[in-house]
Length: 90
View (cartoon, rainbow, N blue to C red):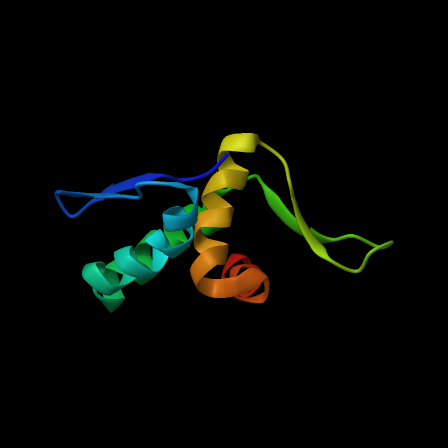
C-alpha cells in the first residue's frame, strides 16, 4: 500500500503518482510546521501495530503487520528513514 494523500490542518495534500508519493511526507512536513508534524509522527508511530524489523538473512529492514499500517509507516520512512521511524517508535 502507498499513501497517496494526507488530510491535515484542514488541507488535503495529494500525490499525483507513486513516484510523487515518495516526496509527499517531505511536503506535508514542511507545510505542517514542526510541532504539528511531530504530533502526527508520534500519534501514528506510537499507536501502530505494524513493525519495522531487520531481516536476519539479508540484514535489510522490512515492514511486517497490517498492510494499511505498513503503508503509513512507509509514508514516514520516506521522510525519516528506517532508523528514524524505529527511534520514534521506541
